[in-house]
Length: 269
Image 1: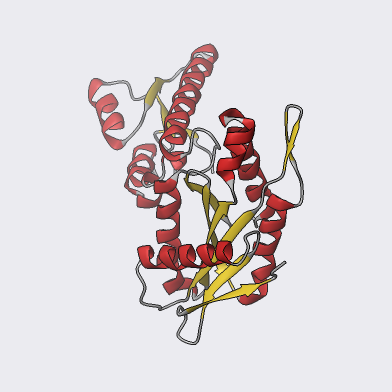
Image 2: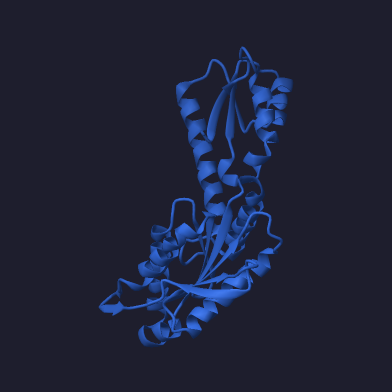
């Protein structure tokens, strides 16, 4: 949907000021800054009261008819500049500066939203906790700048290996958290593809070629299941540490007859 809107005030079925009010009252649009609509009212109604009414309805700008094409172009440019600045602030507030992924708070909010959505779509959601193996060695051997390059490259590989609907965030340090909506056991190959994306190709940093692997823990939240978000992440964390105990570079699932009471390794190498 367009983010910059030019509205006439007088229209056949709904006037521009009413459209402004409805857009500003839409909770879905207002909950996400990236969905904000910058609205310019274009009208011949030029009294002070009309202008105040337009702004009170939610318009961001107001152009009187007859308008000058150059002025309209400049007002549109100002609107785009404001939206761009707003997007940059939003990105900085929600993303990790090093990797460009969602930061911890944002990815946890996304997981929480997906857990709530299971009640309506009746589909499970998987949380994947991934930790780079022996990452301290990378920093000690090649330096922290090389370590940063490894983290950035890993972030890109995780995004490329997932599905379009999956979401990746940096959980902290060398840990990443992935949220996989619409999960079923037939999609276990997604997690194995993620593991291979990290381990199968060396990461080239300057003249050095660095090999890294990842230990991956997976926990699945089923529709209707009574489990808090923190507990779900703890299950994935437990599975991840079992992957490390079993030799690293593998995927371990936290599963069992009651949903979450033991760990199971799949696609182990």
